[in-house]
Image (tube, rainbow, N blue to C red; front, side, top):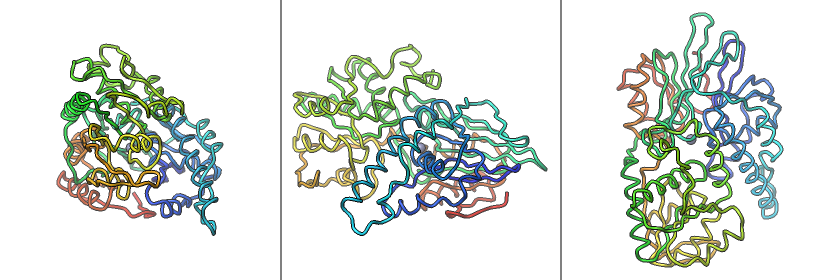
Length: 446
Ligand SMILES: [Zn+2]
């Protein structure tokens, strides 16, 4: 969340929710470091909760819009924010029942009504169209290539000497399934705010990822096993379905049923179906005009009873379910049922944070706790890194080069300290003299 004061206006770039350990995050999330009633507008880069998740809190504190986002981001928020509110309400309810004395986290951060109110304030703004926020303040969105609808923000102030500020949002990657490649703004930039999630890491290529996915499904199906994939409902699930569709058409995987078992994933997938205008036309299936997320093998499961029926499923299958780090959700039931069978594979395709069940499995633990009971893991564990939606260090450097510049000043955000330092080094190597890693709450005169 970045607050910009310019041309007599107070503009917020993103309003994300801190994620991580509950007590610490709850404290940070509850405090808005400004008066929400005095914010004139929000410009939102994309629908991930760490960028959009505090919009309902702004509304709760008296913010009354507008919020600008791409149309796809607006429609994804209509699904993601009520889900976030539901989690807030459930968590608070649980803590109120089980914890004495009550802490600040036993009050929900915001309610379903707050989340629904946000939707009325979001104005869809297409890519590459200049929008005037004020007489001397305008912006446009450019493709960030990270998830459906994701954008970088190109802001121009024309008062005095003028100033151009570019906010990267989250920088994606070339070659991701469905999503277009990043298309950053170009030319001289006075101030760059850039993310640094993977500033110090490298990914497998996306092509290698698909080949490995095919190999794992073939091998597991041949021995009668199931592939369980814990996956984030937004982005990763749709990319996997797309990859499996492509593999099936190419004869690279056998006829195994594929289940997407997550109500949120089912809803986010329907938002994808509403926005073919932002699909990558260079990709084979998109170009053919196929229904990219619907084919003979795939079933979308919302209903709880349908989900339970998957427990007694015989024979090979692919089950994609949330949450991505195995901390909650239906994936836990599938793991409890299938992790003891050596024919099965648990396939990880996303980041696993410390202290999560997903991380313990990735680290090879043989015995884990699921729903409080000890379970012995006999299933194989596989990891595919190539589906990451964030640019790695080489792709971040390529993105900076494409900006062209010169870049007068840069601020490195959205990364652990080591990644942020690595990104700052990349910027200096690319000729940016003034590079800052700002602390939370720090202010700068541009
Ligand atoms: Zn993101």
